[in-house]
Length: 70
Image (cartoon, rainbow, N blue to C red):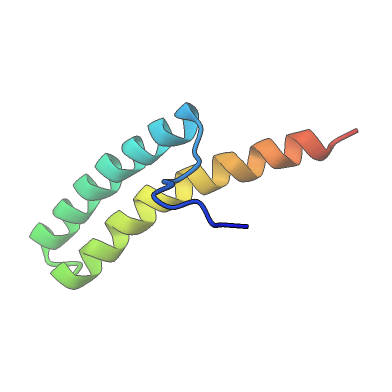
């Protein structure tokens, strides 16, 4: 038994679209918050990472939840 090497994220096209949209929206929000002085630069990176990761996770959770309903 071997482990698959160089296998990327197993996301659907809808999840990739949500990740891209979340990335750009959170990047814009982080930029505005940093320029206004409400958020330090170090925390802006965390906001962008959350914006990239949470939308695909929510879509995947919704798909599995819909599939479990009898």
